[in-house]
Length: 325
Image (cartoon, rainbow, N blue to C red; front, side):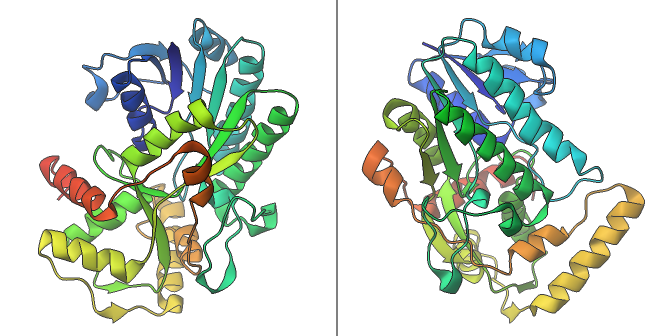
């Protein structure tokens, strides 16, 4: 069994490729260029780009499965068009070519960003359908449109299962992701205050295993939330404080102050081309509690997420060992 994994240079994709390999699968990864942390990898390498159909066609050769994890995942870009070129049209390119091969199963990594947030902190499920008007920012909009492409192709017979991870944490968050940046900022003492918001945290290794379970047991065309624990931001910071020995902030920041800071940060970013320290879309998202329910994945594919405290311990240790702190 050989699987092609896109996005293996990123956080979730790396762990999907690694968990597949640990289970005895032959793994090929699609990369634009090989990053330093994968220089000694035992994965087969296919060089290419989601916007280059010829490279995708070559990468898909001799593969039985496809895990499409790659995405342009950030909360700001000076050129917003890149979100749609990679996340939407890149996904369309890959899925169209995949439909012309004899793949046994395709797993598409979407996001809980595509699911409608419920009011009053009620956890959302896969049944909570959103519209494009519910999407905040170009990242969420592009992921929503990409998922729509995949769902339409599933109706036409593409053997694809969709997974929607929440906010993963753990080791090898090289970038780091927006959630990883919260951990790094806390460890660096850059969080004197907190917003009253909430996230669903999950161990990135559980997310990777959830991808494999979806390939083995998931129903074609369905989507499965891969999350774990719903926590207020202050609760997350208190867990980090307990693990690290550092103090959690006690000051609750009013939303308008965070919004003003995000607006100023983004104006500065437009002038310099550098990513804003406080992405405005991130502030807008924080106005809602992003709580989710993974009951369907637990029931239908045997998904069993583990302790979030242990995942945060791994994240802290990895960031410290790799000099992020």
